[in-house]
Amino acid sequence: MSVEIDPLELGFRRPFTVEVSQILRIRNPNTSPVAFKVKTTAPKQYCVRPNSGRIEPGHDVEVSVLLQAMKQEPPSDARCRDKFLVQSVAITGDKEFTNVAQIWDGVDKSQIQEKKIRVLWLPPFGEETTSPVAATPIRPSTSNRAEETPAPFTSPSETRSSTVDTREIKQESDVAENFQSTVAAVASTAPNTASETYEQLKEQLAKAQATIASLQNDAASGLRQRKAAVADAVGEQASNVQATAQDLAQSARQGTEGVPVQIAAVLCLVSFLLAYIFF
Image 1 (cartoon, rainbow, N blue to C red):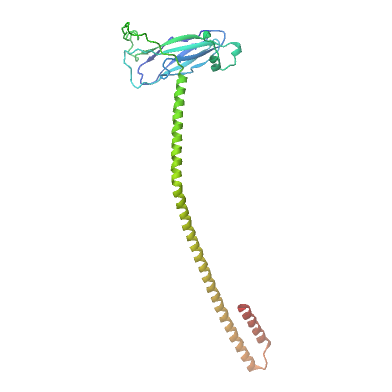
Image 2 (cartoon, rainbow, N blue to C red; image 1 turned 135 degrees about the horizontal axis):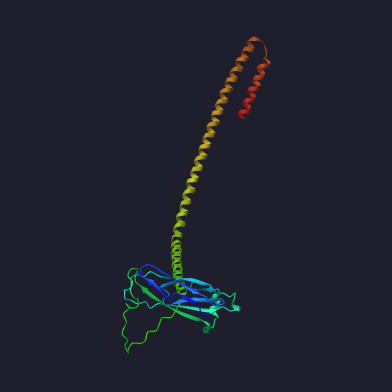
């Protein structure tokens, strides 16, 4: 089952140093759905979206054809030799729910309908000519020259995907090489780093031991000083108490005979304190 195409020729207007796009309409006038596919002889030059799909009966699909920017503008009398091919095939009832890609894989070539589309390079707006093909020079044919064979039609998406795969493989190889060089550099610097870390740890350990010893000496000297101060204070208090006791005893002997109970109690207290402090 054939489909209807509008327009029958794709005309792209200059300049071609920028991207130029055209719309191709594909209509299904049949009573059953059809699957379509768009191919071109210059897949690297064009981007077609969508390049394949399904069209229901009585419906149409708009296909965007993008001519990618060229590095240099072609001569004004140059003729475009690019062509597009629209293939279509009917979707039978047994393939109603089958994927479009699977339909094309199992279809018989005799069932495929094809329509070719020419590509024209048109001048910019304001520089219209009577016929864009009339400006194309016709090369004289010679008997010795072989007849030119048209370029095969290829789906643009297939070529672009293969290019993307090649770029991805190259990027993965570059990443692998960078990873290997990084691992080698780390392996070469690992022994030096380990030795430096060990020396730093030894130095830090020595500093910590010296600090601990200094703290211990300070603590010991401070404890001895505190003990000496306490002993001096206790001795001074004991001498004062003893002098007071002697004075009381002398006063008691002068006043009455014998030792009063108060003096005996003070003496006992002083003896207890002396024994508690020194022993």
